[in-house]
Length: 380
Image (cartoon, rainbow, N blue to C red; front, side, top):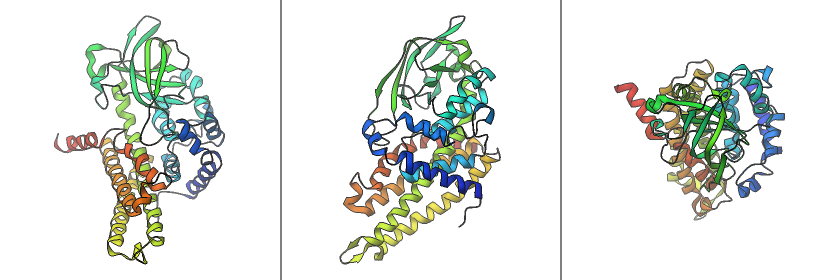
């Protein structure tokens, strides 16, 4: 079926993204995977191409295009190219709304121009060694010292952790407040006591720097409080719908791309003197995956449309996230199987997609958390 949510403008933007990937990303990606981090030059190139800060108002150097469908196109093309290491979606769709929606005028003028030109790379530090999805378990704390906050604690699994120039840290500012005693503090590169630990060795997304962060008596200026004091829980919940939708969009694009390359493979690959595609089992496998992808794409496009119109709620975003990411995982496994031994070889795209995509059901809220949100909405 023809997709109805995209216009000629979105199609033109897709060509721009493909051109950027071909010129600035794909020739260097193998080296970035070896290095465990992308080049800062790639971020600057993305800024020059207008791929950063799509929704940021033009007065701060952004694209002034709040239409989420542009972000969806960006996520689809990066997924199809197999280049998750350059985390533009994290920067644009997850961190961007915190800065534009919660930042003071002074904060916006200080941070957003660099955010948009690629000279200021961002991260958000929520997860801790002992606290993942459970915000009540956060132990990183910030004490009010009059003209500054004194920040102590550690975070782990932080995407962009090595490169980040600006880190939004979720910290406890009221000990007795539980999940509602948290605030967002912005820690900038070079702050005394702010240290980066290991660039973590992952099974996939090797080019994406994922790090441990440590805060030892870091003095955070009072003007670096983002949003309301003790208001982080509400702020986080407000922005999670877009984060989960972004992950879901990448997931369905990943599943569709795997189906495309596997369909080509089984037409070309022969077994017992005939193409694999002539086997009924293979045709049934392809038919099942194609149908699941088509049905999921329809729901995802509806969610994107709803979000573009400001109507996507947390429950629908959770449905999209758990269903699309679990589909991506299933399709990756089945497509690898259909490739046989070649599917296990790292040089084959299906092998890289298998490991790169496995995190999708975990970050942004696990599948189990998504089901809990949906279940509570239905059962109270």
